Length: 159
Image 1 (cartoon, rainbow, N blue to C red):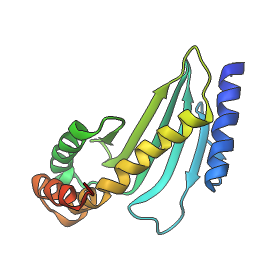
Image 2: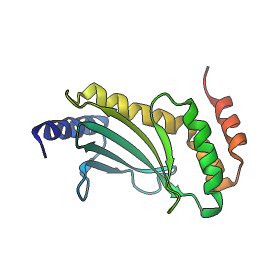
Image 3: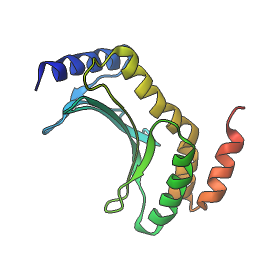
Image 4: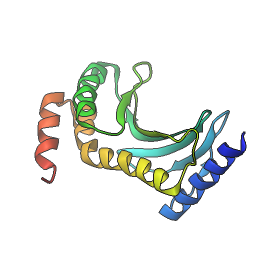
């Protein structure tokens, strides 16, 4: 791990601890930290904050349920609609296993990963999940159509 990645990881850990989370080192070849929100944290179960080689900070919020095979197409429709309205970040669906997550990231290559960049990246993902977790749950768990779920979620948003 380069010195820049070490500094970025230290900043990342410090901010996550200031938030009140208990970050644990990520497993494998990933430079970063995992936060397990414990049971039963639905709709979200965990978060992964990772530093990619080249200077990217990537923050994932993992949902606490998977999309069944029969709901994956509708979930993809939902995410296409939601993602078109997000300025930062996106929702993702793994078609192979149904895993659902929200991702936000920033490229800090050639510079420093500051506490402000970490907070803003985390904040963007958390805001998207807060705004649309109900719609995701409606589509995946309750069988509601993506168009109806989006309409309901947008009605619930403050102006």
